[in-house]
Image (cartoon, rainbow, N blue to C red; front, side, top):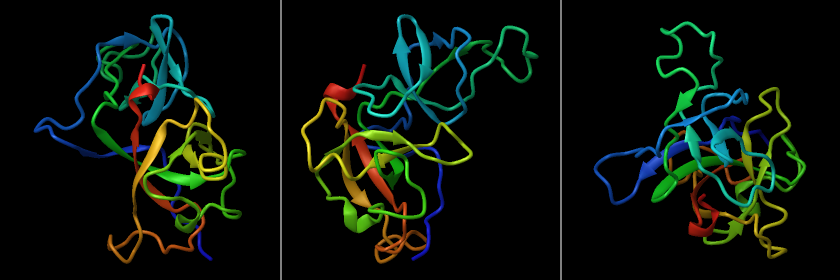
Length: 182
């Protein structure tokens, strides 16, 4: 079996709105470090990168964290960020396991069920902030961290150029449960 391309979560579609990717109120990263395309949480009044088994997220940040000394042309808003509001949005995520497995294990499209809820898990890649969908826990256990609902599978039979049902770390379309939004 092949391995699907691994990537950070990304916006797939904005349902019911003519303005895709509506943003949340601007928040500071407070010196916390995260990459562009990371799921973030609100910690007090500052943003930080989401971790495995997060019980709620603030949004998806389109830009990386910055320091107060970054040049204005690379950080036009300084340390402030407008994360994409997860309410009503659909995101693409790779399938992984609780331990972030890449390239093996129960990480195929066949290992997830449309309509079921799963937790997120940081993937074991060079990009330590790639969040995937943990396929081995959501169906088996009830947990407050099961905040991502599978809406569709991006399989090659339906979506040209996407993943075979047996590819490791296949990609799925998810939405965030209302209880999983900060």
